[in-house]
Amino acid sequence: MSQEDVELVRRVYEAHERGDFTAVLAAYDPEIEWHVLGVAELGFDPVYIGHDGVRTFWRLWLSAWETTSFEYDEFIDAGEHVVVVQSQRMRGRTSGIELEWNSYAQVWTIRDAKVVRMEFFPTRGEALEALGLQE
Image 1: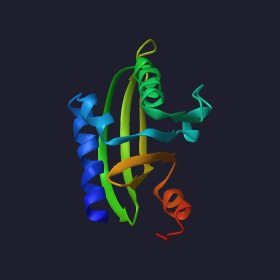
Image 2: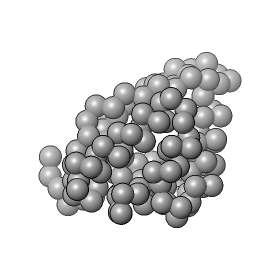
Image 3: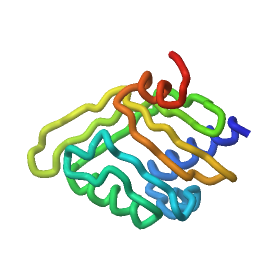
């Protein structure tokens, strides 16, 4: 089952990359919890709930950037969780400043073939530690 979960998360990323947000949301439980404590200090709520909450997060996040690109470095099968290590490059919409956020992690929780929770972590190690796993 967990390899299927990894493939589900991969499909979510692929749909996001091609702008197919209908497919993205179809993979999410209607009551998904979207935890972004790592960016809360930037003015974001620490948690967004449901499809509308996820839409709100992405609308706010993407409004700040002229461009964004993602690289997915690693997908880790962790039982009912999938850990994704990734990097992101952005250019500020008004400032033009280019930023890189390298090797941060997301933990995706899957139940009944739906994403029920996603949580950001600053590092791979912190994500694994949160799941009781070691590097």
